Image (cartoon, rainbow, N blue to C red):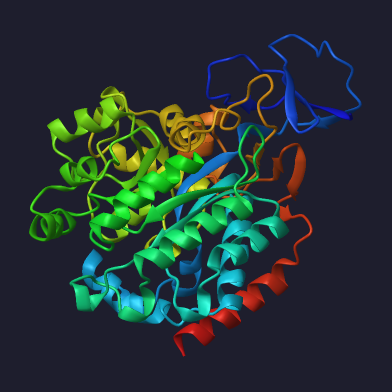
Length: 448
């Protein structure tokens, strides 16, 4: 086993308050030692990576995305719309997705995220038109090619416009089709245990886009295979009202009625909860993915992160779909999370370290992972290293704070399980111009 000392970083964020001021030693895909201030490694080191110009972080973790939406960024007919009209505009476009388009969208999005320091991505794919019934298989292929660590959620929509839902009928499936394919992809692709590269979760798009029976049966299926559950919830007040009119209850009451109020569940957005609902969610150990940029683009509101944490819930970060962000950049999302939370809380109540925690160990907690998201002994060697050599950082005195406050966007080096996936700001084993060309061609084909 070859060992590497990531030596003398400019600054370190471990996400657990341990001292790694003089770096870390990695080998065999794991962190073998944290080297404290003034110390040297106690184990034999085969090679040294000079990190004296780098800020060292655990690999960032994106807990909610829709990678297929990289094909419809800044799409003119969908600009400046509220959530439901925005969805109604884009659903017919997304219904035309083809396998090659999804492959190119997934690969481009994963590489874009890698370049921002993101090593683990949870993607919520819920569109399975007739031409795309094996969407998860396609995403597995793309993730394997890029080397990203992924949680691919087998999403679902079973209530189309004819049943009072939002999506066109061509994008929905029957409950039986959804459950059968959910079981198939779990058995085919899900990895459990430490170091898992590909995991599957089950993720009906939202409570009002599937039947009540599917929510119940999906929870049962997920638990029989010990995989996690995910859905959108309480993103807008319109959604709350839709849930009341459709089911006669608010979203959290509905969640509890279908056996989803549980610690194996994480929710996207989670903005419009009242005080009593926050307490119930926290007591149940539910996780919430905070998506600040998306929430700003669609004017959805601000997640009550601190109240949720204080109630016992887990908070992570996500970039959300590129059609509502419109970027796939986790480092920028950290800054957005800090800034938008300063609109809800006082400046001393949410710090740059809090935002970094949400993007690392907080996100790992949301995904139920204990092997990633922090720099600690025996954790996966998922690392992001950033240089502060751009004009925006000139004059900065605290390197870690500068990373967030001055707006870092691109990592210099990124490793997954100790293997470099980004070197000197470029993806390894990926022809970036060709990738962009193929992705652009798919985007044009989709909207033509």
